[in-house]
Image 1 (cartoon, rainbow, N blue to C red):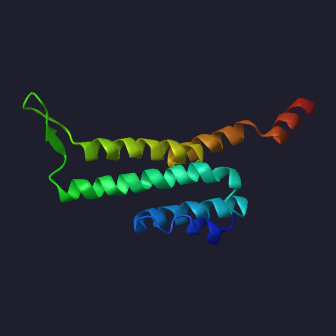
Image 2 (cartoon, rainbow, N blue to C red; image 1 turned 60 degrees about the vertical axis):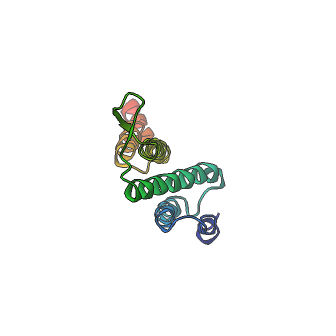
Length: 126
């Protein structure tokens, strides 16, 4: 899928989500020359969770919403805060599956170096 078509998918999303998806699109286009069709479902899930995270952050800033009272007159994390953290976890998992965070990149690079077929064959035939 070309870049323009891909970015049109997220035109109804928050500006921050559009910005993040444009960054991811550019990264994938640099690597694959286009956004592979097989990635679309995961990228749509990423955009949805980014939208949830942005809306949760807005709810936290509008309300004094970091905590709620629990039934024992104590404090607990508010629903927007719990939703924010949950969406953040899902986003991190999706980014990791695409190798789009520093930890995933370092692991992918390490694995590529370990499985260098040319070096392996040279070592066998030397």
